[in-house]
Image (cartoon, rainbow, N blue to C red; front, side, top):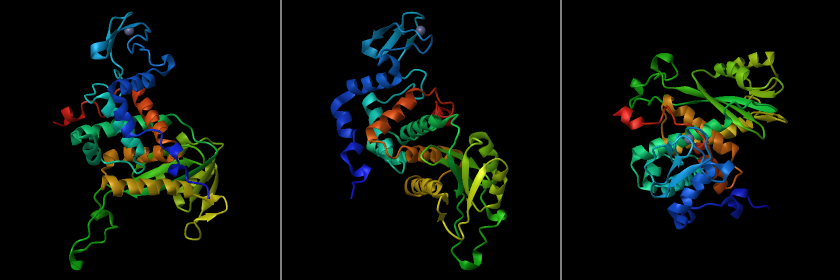
Amino acid sequence: MAQHFLLSAQARTLSLKAIYAAGEEKAYATFRKLRWPSTDGAPVCPHCGGLDAYEITTRRRFKCAACGKQFSVTSGTILASRKMSFVDLLAAICIIANAAKGISALQLSRDLDCQHKTAFVLAHKIREAIAAETKGHELDGEVEVDGAYFGGHIRPANHAENRVDRRLAQYQTGKRRVVIAFRERKGRTLTFVERSEADGVDIAKRVVSRSAIMHADEAAHWDALHNGWQVHRINHSEAYCTGDECTNQAESYFSRLRRMVSGQHHFVTPQYLHQYAAHAAWLEDHRREANGELAHRALGLALNHKVSRNWKGYWQRAA
Ligand SMILES: [Zn+2]
């Protein structure tokens, strides 16, 4: 039997051992190459686009010859005002890329020996950057759609006589959300967090090409999709798959997200659920890539993503 890709040596192209053995200078060179790929790491001024800059080597900064402003390899990116060394940042991204079910901030803080706050914001910045990879992507071909509910767990009371019907709206916490996933077969996965799965119909109008063939389950709200697309339906009470009709790839995505939420994060608030959902989608879409490729992809996305409005100065605002 052929060896599974993830078990092969080709799947392991980057390790913490290699990152730390190569050291800070090599890590810095990696950052430069991924920030400025078109010039192979030579600085490009983020203020004016100038290609001529003096290097202030001791501080790892540059001064633009055209506009005179100073900048660094992370200026204007989501990793701006970093306090971690380049080698630690690269290691953090390697750990995040290696974690097939995601990683909690607590675990990351132990691995990196940094504060929980630092790990929390860093991981969320990386999630925001990798989620942007599918920004503006229109889904086409065969597209599966499905939804799954997360959060808002209500603990049953200890004594049976005190227990309530947890399905009733009056006992709900208001924190339950549905993740709606659109997954191209052999393509990308887009995720959305809403209050009701039926909201997926309006989202489909925005993100799914009219030439796509859609696959959905028997839920009545998906009937509306037939107005805009050719839709195959699968009735899960009869079968999970009949030939071509199934939403199995969307289900695979949800099983990864469930393992991520229950195994790593333990609970999620509605506020951050979209970040975990997008992270799981990104991992799912790139699951056949070697880990070095994944880490470089994540770092490249972070260095080409503008400063985050959500995460810049997060703790200063929270304090
Ligand atoms: Zn400039």
